[in-house]
Length: 290
Image 1 (tube, rainbow, N blue to C red):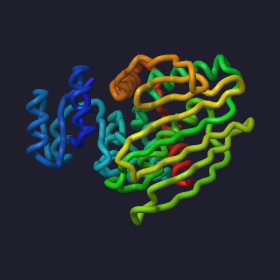
Image 2 (image 1 turned 135 degrees about the vertical axis):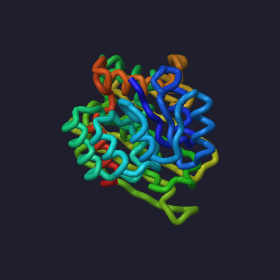
Image 3 (image 1 turned 45 degrees about the horizontal axis):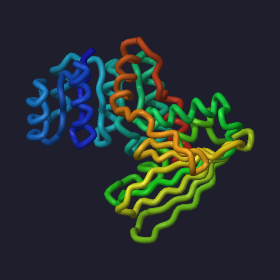
Image 4 (image 1 turned 120 degrees about the vertical axis):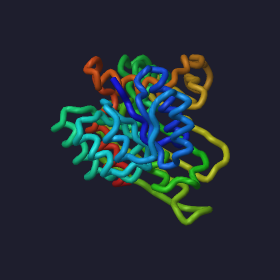
């Protein structure tokens, strides 16, 4: 299995390292030749500053592409039967992603997108608790996330809130049937805070509060069950029961590594894809509707 890394910003460089650790990195691309050369030489692989030259020169099975790679390049990769892992949704809308999904199915290749936080051991532990009804029936989820997103382009919901929407869908095990959103801006021209309510079947609800103008990073959530309230700090992975008893800090895992490993194993036919195209389309539609 040979994988190419398209784009070498901070996440792209992390992806290149992970691919190299797995022994599957075959080439790197970045429009900045000096950056491409630096990373290529670091991992002893070919490097390019031209997408066309890379595609015509290299023999590879799949690619991880960053947010700056055009949808036309992604389409070309799928058309050439390359497995594709998108770093994030970037400017791709639900209609465009639907077309990419259909092309990937036609060419029988894997298509996925980076939603790393669902790979957290703490999130998976909460999912086990919910499935086993260890603390009774799940009633409600609450999320609070803040950080400095002033440099982001697509808006608060796509850059931040969508991660909590994904976790909510995973924990509840379905997609919402009702979405209500309030957006506002206090210190910028773009929205910098949002409140989102997701209504699911069987009266289950997720409330998501996002703030994108804070220098302090915070990612917390609460799972309100009939018998207890579970609190999770997504930064530390510590789980508390009703604000008193700590379940301790779950084993920290490299979520990006697990996500990429799942992509590779799915491309090799050794495992089921964890973040499926249909889920990504539904997430995109929810974010667009919000």
